[in-house]
Amino acid sequence: MRRSHPRLDLNRIEALLKARHNDTFLRLKDLPDPYTFKDMKRAVRRILRAIEKGEKILLVGDYDVDGVSATAIVRHFFRALGIPLEWVIPNRFRDGYGLSPTLFPRLKHADLIITVDNGISAVEAARLCTEAGIDLIVTDHHIVPETPPEAYAIVDQKQPECSFPHAEVCGAQIAWYLCAALNRELKAGVDMKRLLELSALAIIADIMPLQHINRAMVQQGLRLLERSDSPFIVAWREQTGKTTLRAEDIAFGLAPLLNSAGRMEDAAEACEFLCTEDPMEARRLLMVLQGYNERRKGLENAITCEAAERVNEEDPVLVLAGEEWHEGVLGIVAARIARRFERPALVLSRTETGYKGSGRSFGECDLFALVDSQREVLEKFGGHRAAVGLSLDAENLEAFRDALIESATTLCPREPFADPDILGELPPELADWELYRLLERFEPYGEGNPRPKFVSRGLEVLEHRALGSEGIHHRYRLGNGTVELQAIQFRSDTFVPVGSRVDLLYSLGSNTFNGRTTLQLTIEKIMTI
Image 1 (cartoon, rainbow, N blue to C red):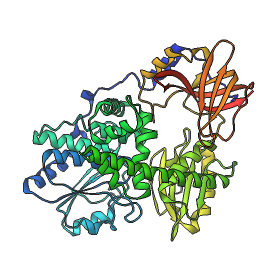
Image 2 (cartoon, helix red, strand yellow; image 1 turned 90 degrees about the vertical axis):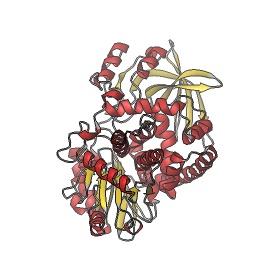
Image 3 (cartoon, rainbow, N blue to C red; image 1 turned 90 degrees about the horizontal axis):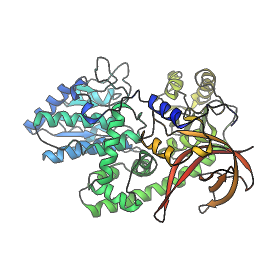
């Protein structure tokens, strides 16, 4: 932790945080018009015709939080209209991803198929739709391939000639915009503002940058979730005791629960949780999701340990492969390995023909660009800067790993303690409630607006206590003779003994216990001097 960081005071911190947003704190009334999306008007007109003629409309979602939330948004909207809507979320293990030829036999009775958070790469499935006389509307947010699918309409902000002003939005936001446009044309009076609570879940979970319209939609969505009477969030608030919500509560609390259904069994249960109008059913489904999440945690911990044993710490990017690693948790394992070893990580599991898995970036590395440099040896590949998914033949694994390591030397150079989230060096005396309130002004934090991290030096460990059944969490009391600070460190196999002097990398938060709220540092690194 000897990397030099600028010395901070409150004015400097405020200036640095303002610079992230260019002083553009958008409000909901500033959101772009739905028809700035290419093909949005064409899509809306086709859906209106289907509604008028009583055609069979079928919605195809995706099994992550974004896809499940997008599906729920459209389901809620059509329910409010009183219009029948069939829906399908592919099963990760039986159907694969999105609109696929494997899934098509379950769709071929439809007159109109609408995708949310998928479909932009579904060339073969789109051809099957055309042959069957089914009109296809694709709404997606992923990168458009050189040969897009043949569809009646494609609503994707990344396609050429699309005038929507923000490139990084998620599938649920586009689904919300589609419903908003339909609501306008039908003069239906559906409360679109309320559906922002589902958009907010997806924006956070899909790691969208919390700037511009994403920031505005998440801020409003979190406020709605805090007081919402939707059974799913009422059940979750009851279970967690949450009265105020931050983006991290979604990212590390609700989102993993929702994701666990698709990872372990079937994402349809997560979608039912978001859509049910019965409070008792919401509580039952919450218990089901919690069961999936506990299974997920057990698998994740076991695979993370196995993967960590295979790490070569000389490699600038980690490509780790196992024989029977559960496909549903590979992305989470990759994220944990990337954080632990401070470099991008790809975690793959053996399939019948090769390897399939997920990757997560670290720091400023563009993982999509890194893996894209080796696209020619991949069977399937997709994702964005921070996260990717891929599959490849077994015979290509070693060549892929070697080429990626070579490319990473140039594309993702490593620099010790170069975490871009570190604002600078903070005198311990400034880690107080005044700073806490300043940081609150720039909520929500997440991708593109990361929670600030600080370095403080020369603190003494005054007290230490291990927490948790396995003793892997640690609570510290730290001081420098002038100020004392409470701190917690999660998931560490080691601790620093009382009397040691340390440098600290941390974020500033709070802890409420027995009705009393105190400041608390969340330690990312603690190093003895």
